[in-house]
Structure formats: structure tokens, C-alpha cells
Length: 95
Image (cartoon, rainbow, N blue to C red; front, side, top):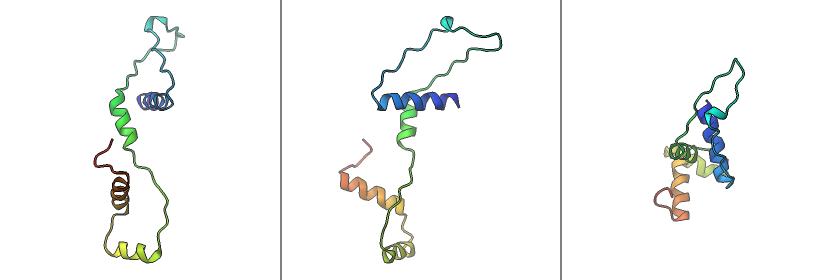
């Protein structure tokens, strides 16, 4: 879970345009007798893609008659909303 925590933190720093600190050289880390150094590395392109493609829930309101008809026709509400948003925003592929 340390990789995820580091990746999320670095992503947050990037999004806020904050400076990302340089890693501390291993020989500058002072340990207690019961501690050990563990390398944590994150490949940010993969982390960014996972975060940006994570699905979030949105609450919306539509008329009941429209909801009933869509359910009868087995409409995938998420897919329709995504398609409509992309069309409205002029997006063919993810930017």
C-alpha cells in the first residue's frame, strides 16, 4: 500500500503544482535498531492513468417517465452520459 500512498501523494502535488522534493539518499537516513530502509517506487504515468480513469459516482435527476422507458430499453445510463458529455465537450478520445 506504500506504493499507492506515494503515488496518490505525488499526483496531488502535481495537480496542485507543488514542488516534488528530491528523495533522501539512503546513506542520509538515520534508523533506530528496529527499523529498515525499504525502497518505494512509483511509475507515475501508470499511476496518473489509473487515477484519471477511476470511475466516480454522480447523482442526477431525470423525469420518471424517461427513467422507466430507459430501463425498459435496457439503457446503460453511465455509457449514455459519458457519450453525451464527450459529444457536448467535443471530445473524441480522452485528452
